[in-house]
Image (cartoon, rainbow, N blue to C red; front, side, top):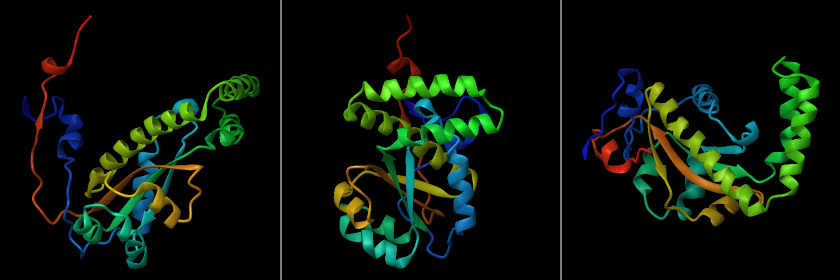
Length: 212
């Protein structure tokens, strides 16, 4: 094992990203900047480019009070963060297929013929798989965007921490979302660190990798 460190300096944001649990309450991320952080993160890949991630940004005192009863831990983290971003996966993501494909045609990224081929393939695929398979795919795609969200935030000079310890179904209901449609993935605190970041240990490549 070794101290966390990147091999390529161009990837330094990966090394600089650390989990922060106490934030500077005097620093408030403006919504315009939060918009940019989210937009950059949404360059993440997703199955069929359906982009199933949905966000609820909780950045007001009332919003924080709303979610407080559903946090199992991390009360100081939630209270001091500039915002908490709730990440959900949308089980209805296939309903946006035509809209997304049409936009590709309008931007000259694909032909109308190819769009029709893709639409047919996606329709057949969705008809042949279970909701459980869709949920599993959502969790993977939302994992991609969540990681990019943490890296995006660091690129803007902010710190983050993913939170899994909360009452997922209850919080989803409290936010007014359909629990059958929206799958809770995680919460992400974001703000300016008010504590020193700590380095951490990582496995070496040799310890966890097989070569065939």
